Length: 502
Ligand code: SF4
Image (cartoon, rainbow, N blue to C red; front, side, top):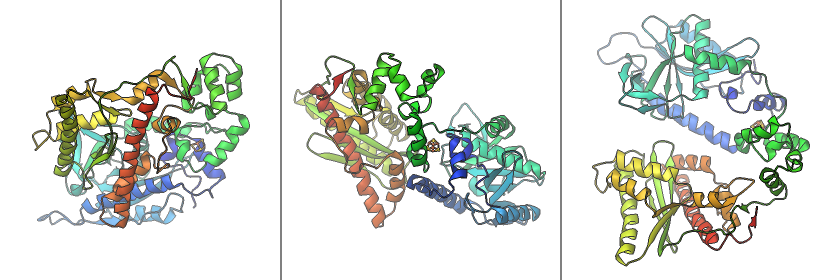
């Protein structure tokens, strides 16, 4: 049977209108972002498949049967894969990869269970592969964990980890448990392999069922509402038409940002403008008129120092920081590593950057000059500065964590986004990509967003032409962000010319 009517766990999270559009417009192709996400999923699968056992442990004379079912895209007919899954279960395979089940009454669902592991009593443990970080090392917690390479061979042990819940992963495991229960082989537990591909973390599935039931029973919306994910959704051109025809307030205030107004019966942009509610109405008017920024203060300002450096960092998922970039007002300096993160190369790269930055500061101080390093929204930088000092403590050139903490809490480390947020307001938000063009700065790679940079980093780890091009793009992107931050500072210092008072 072909499947547009089947709901997946991913469909149950975020915008539910997607499901409506998918049924109405199955012909709309996936976006590039979705294809890149799919490529990351496939890469994760390939990494795990490599680790899974193919034979019994040495000296173990038991039979070991692994059955790999070829993958079936979610929008394709899954009947043969479902049949193959049932046959593999009937054969009492120890490991089954690529299992597929369908089920449900009312809302029919399909769940792809990446790995099924047979347990000693003949029931099965569903294991899914996720690109989330699914657990954190935590000395005060324990959770059952098993090495990926021991799935189907060994038993879980208690590890010092705390699980992190992700709704889509939870729904997938809950569906898997339902499917296994239907055929009498559910073991009551499920496991997730996250960004650390070497471990599967186990948890009971019963607590996941109420949230799944609620999601399955939820009525589908009859109208779109703009949310964050619209930006990369294949149905946006269709939804945008509907929203514009209705002048829906979510065009201006996405997601829940318009809740207060909706609760007051204001559902259109015109309604908000006409309600004459002071700042909210003035901002709605500004949005309609294409005004990007307004000033909240009489005089826009920014601090200054004799030596100024603009910093930007790129991290890959939760694995580490691979690029520290800095613009010193004349030149861009990059500190990059393209090998897998978490080891000596990342530590050495971080050490090089840190000593360069501190060298700039020390030279300024020695010359009697003031120093400031700037960053746009420094949460990520603060996190990886701290984590790099912590993770690589004791390695050559790594500063003590206290030294990093002292610097990032000092007046020499300035968040430009905070300066902007304190003085300006924008109907379309205050992202660097919104503010910097107002300061006259444009990006070379205008459409290179965060998701693409994650993908580019994955490609950049290779050594072929595509990898080299991905590295060039990542460096250009990082340099642009450093220079854009510098441009915004200079523009703030000039009083943000062109911006009117709110
Ligand atoms: S464009 Fe937005 S509202 Fe429309 S289906 Fe996609 S996410 Fe939902």
